[in-house]
Each structure stands twice: as C-alpha cells, then as structure tokens.
Amino acid sequence: IQGRVMEWVALGVALFVVLLAGLGHMGYRKHMLQLKQWARVLSEMPAVQPHQNLEDLPEPAQRLLRHAISDDAKAVRGVSFKAVGEIRPAKDGEWLPCVAYQTLRVPGGFTWRCYVKSGLMRLSGGDHYLAGSGGVHFWLLGVFHAVKSKGRDVAKSAAHRALLEAMWLPPALLPSEHVEWLDGDNDTARVKLKLDEEELVVEYKIDSDGRIVSVKGERWGDQNDEHEWQPMTFGGVMEAEQTVQGYTVPSKFRVGWHFGNDEWQDGEFYRAELQDIQFIE
Image (cartoon, rainbow, N blue to C red; front, top):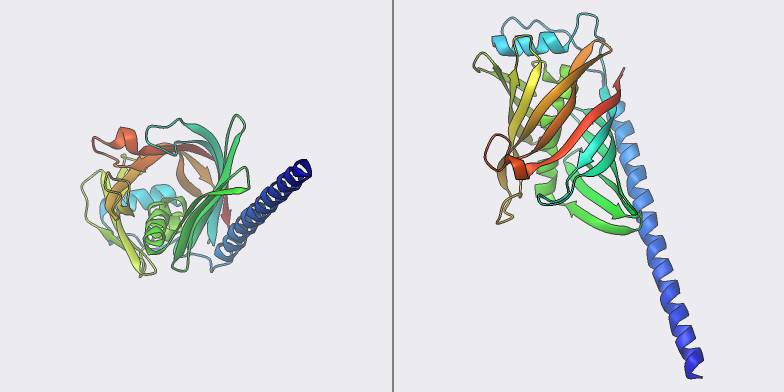
C-alpha cells in the first residue's frame, strides 16, 4: 500500500509540474503575441513627413538631418528591423548570442522581441513601451517566467529608451511639438524629445558629414549599487551605418549604462548589428 501511495504522490507531483509548465508556456505565448499586436498598432500610426525647412536649426542639427534624410525619402509610419548580436544580462556575466526583432515609432513607442541561446539555455521575451505603459518580461525555455518588470519606473525607463532610439526613424527628429533642437558645439547635436508625459535631452556626437558617432542621454534607471531609480547616463558607440529607402541610420552599435564615464566597461550590455531594416510606408 505504501508503495502505491508513493506512486500516486509522484504522479500527482508530475501532473502538477506539467500543469505549471503548461500555464507558463501559455503566458509566454500570450505575451509574445501581444508584442506582435502592439507592433501592428505602431506600424499603423499616421505617416511622418520627411521634409522640412531646416534653415532655422543649429548647424549640427542641420548636418545630422541632411545626412540622415535624402531628398527622395518618402513619408513613413515607423521602422522595423532585426538585430543580431550579443547581450550581457549581468555586469560580471558572460556575453550571450541573441537575435531581436524591433518595431519603432516615435511618437508612439516600440516593441522588442529577443531570443537568447547559449548551450541548452533558452531565454526569450521582450521589452515594450506604448501609450504610457512599459514592461520587460523574459521566460526560460519558454516556460518559466524568469524576468517580470513593470510599473511606473519601468515605463519611464522604456519611454526614455524609445527617445534614445529615435535616430532609427529620422523623420522623428524633425522639428515638431515633440522635438526641440538645442544649441551644441561643432560636433554635438542636442535635442529635447517628448513622448507622452516624458521628455529627454539626447546628445549626438557627429562627424563632419553628419554621421552619428555616439548617442547618450540621462535615462531613468536603477543600475547602481543602491538599486534606486534615478536619471543615469545611457548611450553608446555607433560603429557603422546603412542607407535604406532614402534614410541613413546607425546599423552597428555598442550600448549600455554609464556611457562616457569610468563605469562604462561594466555598464555596456548590448552589442548588435541591424539587418532587414524596413521603413513602413
């Protein structure tokens, strides 16, 4: 009898584990589907016109925009691309290969679906911002909800990410109620960008042709010893660019926290190269 009882207990435990795994996988599939649905919402927003009179802008801003937007560029609703590279989840951890798919529309937001593989380990999930809401969710093996971050601070940080990445949609940098170009030195273009209730001053270092060399801004984050939310320098180096559909954008980069100071070596966590860039007309 005792043996049968143990068999039934083992069976019950096994069924419980299978049930939990099934529920976890359902949550994973639901979230990844939601990211795709949000991406469609972004891609269906009104098109942004690519041409304006730039004469009243600071010279570095004119140089950047003229380099990024050609005369034959068309109005676009957003941009999507694949990013192939590596990510470092912890500052003292290993770099892991990853592939991500992103849709960006500013004003609006972004979705980012990421797949990380290392040996038998599989970590997948994503990040997003849309309509004042943002969150980071990742699942181990598509079953165990390993990372679950949401709330006001996370949404604020996600909004700042969208603004820092506006360079991938050059029309988003043209003067508007959401964009105010500021004075900068000869190799620095500075702009104040707004998204919903958030705003951020983004600084682009550019060369003599207007190519973006680096980008940085004070993004909301908690990557500090106290894990307290506060403005923190976020940015990175742009190592190459591509021209697609009349738009020239950075296409290879290294980014992370503490850019430009002594902690950058620990703060850098994402390196990637863009592929399949498509501006959504």
